[in-house]
Image (cartoon, rainbow, N blue to C red; front, top):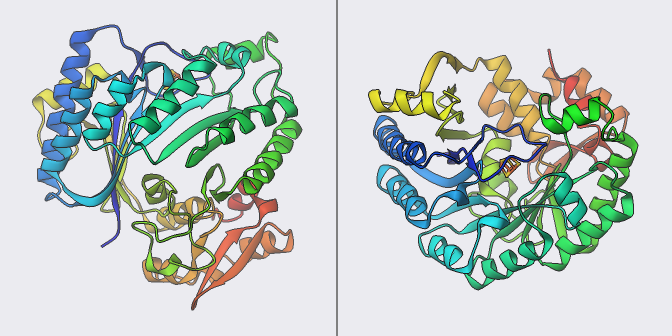
Length: 409
Ligand code: SF4
């Protein structure tokens, strides 16, 4: 049985960061929050029944800021999932968090309630950058939050950072990264700033109030990141994700990648691996989407609309419009499998799994695209047991889009 993950969207944030285009709303109205919580619990129960209480490997509370929920609400969600699905004994249960929303008591309560992985949106260790991003927290708060997380016995802690911020120099980025390394996290998710259309930050850049991000600087920062993290004992397993170097025997690793040179580190995000391995996941909450039984479903985006639909609906897909339910055809599924799998810098895409799943030979079907990638030093075949896996070379990480576009038919 392949892994199944569950994503749960909590759309509230205390304030709105100027670069954010996520489906998130400032938490002003307590009664709307309460109605949302009740609706979410109903959607969890109904989805469990409609899918036959399937085994679940991961739960991921994302947002928004899930840690705007009080501990009781968070634990009610986890308990309801546990009652509605067959939760794996070693399930990875993650919550995203904003350092400014955390306290030692809070972290202890959610850890006792079953959350076993904490992902913290740190973004920077320089106060002027945090202010520029309009983040709610300051630098000392990050240090406290990490210390509290360890005291609360979170032994799987991930920090998120963003590089190539306006005015940021390479050495300032290296400083940020070194501060993160010094905190000894188990996992790091590191992204270059993306100026999303319609965000205040994008407008400020367009109007010349902030400088345009520079692609060359971004590339230098990315390369420095790879070097510094490799030297600090982290293993890159995805284009933007690193985990402590410990290949161990991660839960839910497919047999084909266990204890081989393509093994993903033990503390890699099991939930995100489900996405990148193109496995099934359910998405619950406003605007959440999932892919289950080759059907992609996206919930109504606005919390108000979502709540109204859930209050009157039943069954799987109760919070969806017809237009947001899409059967994934084979060419799309194949394309997505490659697009996602090539993000996995260790594992890449297994030729054997591809053939089993799609009844198509990977090397033959995509010969032109593969030849392009290999002749430009961006793709490589790697032997793993009796399997062959196609993956990006380190030079290909920065040019992944250029490689992937060759696979589009
Ligand atoms: S905390 Fe995260 S989700 Fe909330 S506004 Fe900021 S970037 Fe967006």
